[in-house]
Amino acid sequence: FAGLWIDRLGMRDPNATDRGGFVLNAAFTDDLEDHESQLRALWGGPLCVTRHEHTLSDLQKVQNELMREGGKEFGLHVLFSSVSETHNFVELGVVVIDDEAREALDARYGDGTVGVSAALQPVP
Image 1: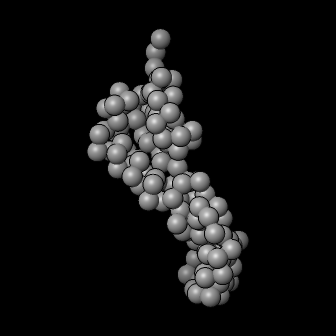
Image 2 (image 1 turned 180 degrees about the vertical axis):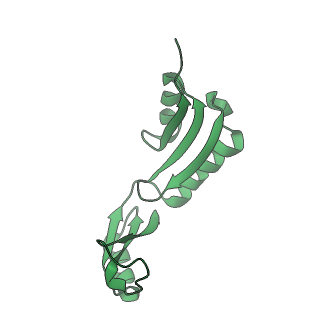
Image 3 (image 1 turned 60 degrees about the vertical axis):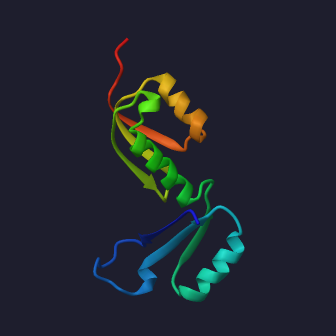
């Protein structure tokens, strides 16, 4: 399992409760046909089943590791973190990051697994 979210279709009444106005999105790392079949038995509305590279559990482990250690291994002062189920990565907010730390994150967790937002840019 890699994530689950709901998208609204078009401009609809925000209080609408009918399933036709929403798309249930479910992401998995494999067996998409089987997962889609099981979900269709439970959900009668629009459905999108997609493949993601990382499981939600794996991304949460990365997030927890970075928050628990505070990014110290990478020389980072962490401000916040979140897991994006829709984009399948961990967003990490830091004070500042240099190219060496970005490369170290990619080497440790895989390219694009951790997206970093820095409040400040390093000065040479």
